[in-house]
Image 1 (cartoon, rainbow, N blue to C red):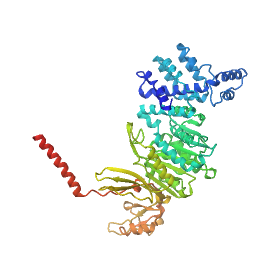
Image 2 (cartoon, rainbow, N blue to C red):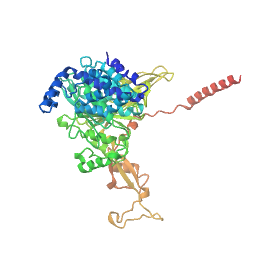
Image 3 (cartoon, rainbow, N blue to C red):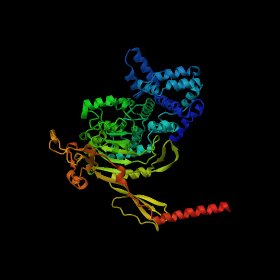
Image 4 (cartoon, one colour):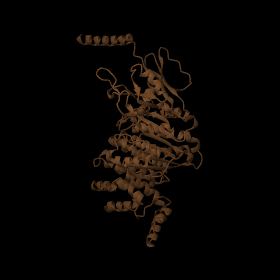
Length: 611
């Protein structure tokens, strides 16, 4: 049975729940029971030996855990004499027996069921007289590793999570990052390392500080397994929401990962990976979420530790903590001399440009650009996520850029690379196809500028479209049609995003128009500045400030001067401006012709009605 069929079979348990549970609650029954049955099958071959070892060590008064793990050949165990088959043999006591069976698991595994609030779910099933029926259904599913290996089981579980997310649209964004977005990010992270990752026995680490249900981690693991079945990707994560954390741990357990690497808690205020560094990192932090509740902890670290802590470059405004997650990830990078790290993070538009020179956001952008950490920023289509339709961007960062990328940032506008979904899911109406992902990956991998070329027929309809790399020949326009070209990949030097904000002063004058001179301090004998006429100008870093001032300001205000003490360096990435293409308005004669056609049609319709 393939993954799709098996996940559909397991989800069919929902037929029993209809009426007693809301659709959005089905996952709270099906996901933990799936985990329970999988573990039950995995532990079955060594069950008798584990129980014997447990009894012997208990009798001897010795800590049994390392011994029973060795017998089980796994990082977890269950020392209850029960299993799901035996639960079926005592229908009257199934609730108490199920609880006893859960308590027999290793503490790490028990915590999964606790965070699912499984005891409350069992109680509801018992009161609805459904507990035996549901348990019996799962007891009949053969999820033994000889029938369903770890990768297949991981895909089945991922499909079940997706079904759960789709049925609870209002919270799907918290649970689930669209798979194609993760796939694109993983492609961009791994493409430059494909040679190293295909070597036998390679071991790498990956971390997601906003792990959710573990989608990013599991897709990364699948991708590397496709690339090199002998490679090993050890996965780490932290998640704030207890239910999502439980799902993530369960998914990692099913995939054979060490679940002690998945931490519950707030990543920003309580770093569960203190002192750890990783090869790869992925994150889709919440967009535009304020950090007021944890402000004290963040500011304390910022003030006490400075650049030796996570937030040395600066703090963004309290209303949006996205860039705090970016700084957190940067703090987990291996030094370049130890092999370095690569990072992919999804952010909304505000981290690109919010905040003027000297602000926390600008200082963070300044830090990543002046330290040459940004490889690329990719604009995704709108309406890609379940809980928002806003513009989103994937940032790829690295402290081990290839030589040809050093000093440069690639911007890729993939906002037109989408196809309409057959059925909308919350705010998600669009998806990226495999072809779209491949096109973006190629532009990034080749590190070239490129254009999207659209052939428009004589009827004004799109005939075809293709991505042309810089230097490739433009196709001919169709008869009576035209060729439309827009940039989709551009490359800039880091400093092109920087600017000086200069303060332009004008003199204070009295009612007669005479200059008012300062009487003491630095301004003694000099014109006093008039604060009501004060202005600022942003001068590109590539341009001399005085040259700019003489050209742009003095012709309009000959008495102005620059207060150099107030000059600040700022950075912003005006993404849309770099891809803007001016489209001239239509000719008036063409518009008049169209209007005449419309009015003639309306006239004909009115005449038809009056006849």
